[in-house]
Length: 144
Image: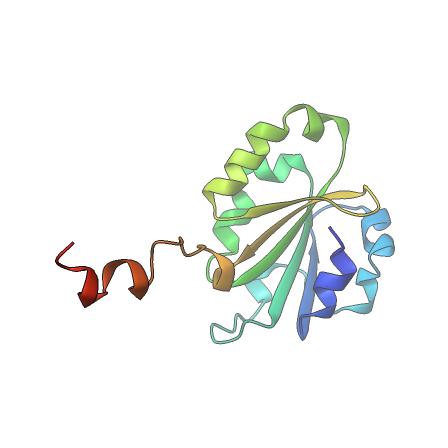
């Protein structure tokens, strides 16, 4: 995934690094965005889709589930999970945990530094093809 391109489509970006990984911050130029010390101090705007919080974590934070308790109310979150051997060995386990919290998996970043997961409330649920007025609310088809 092209993380820089995704970030370019957002207007307000905040960075929260839960681990000390300067490589991820440098490779995506994240130091040019405001850094927040914790999610407790971050004021959530419930009415915008252009606000994004980028959280940098490793596999340990996924197992602890602490990060998910604190990001309640955020509408757009990008998780950059530091790519390492233990994460790759247990990728299915960690991906399933993140799926259960509503995150979508976008693959490995273009520089192989991080696995990218995004929670975007505006894209949370895809509408199925059958959910439209042509298939179920069409009076001409009622007698068929």
